Image: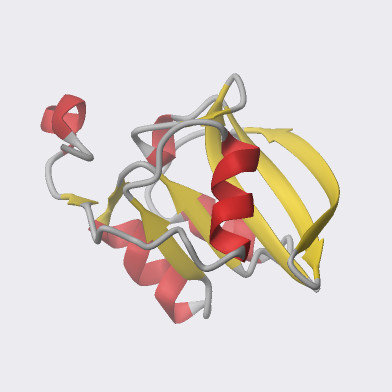
Amino acid sequence: MLRIAVATDNGMVTGHFGHCQEFMLFDTQNETIQNTETIANPGHKPGFLPNFLADRGVNTIISGGMGGGAVDIFNSRDVEVIVGAQGDARAAVEAYLKGELESTGSVCHEHQHHDHCGE
């Protein structure tokens, strides 16, 4: 089983991981979504969210953009990071499962420029 988290606002992939409204968790098996769960973003503080999600068994995180610190923590927890995604969260997961969603490597370096993430 693979557990994929998507940083979302109203079911759409958000541009900035830490400031999303919620995380949609997709439990998948054999490239099929078996179960979904939505959990509210418990709050943005440095280093917290990657561990929060990894502790819930997440194997892959999908987001529009993400800061380098979060990417590093996910990498240290063996969680695959896919950034540069957009659109409907379920569609992004389905594309990922088919091998059609690739990370753009879009890492946000400065929070004050968060409007420009993912460009």
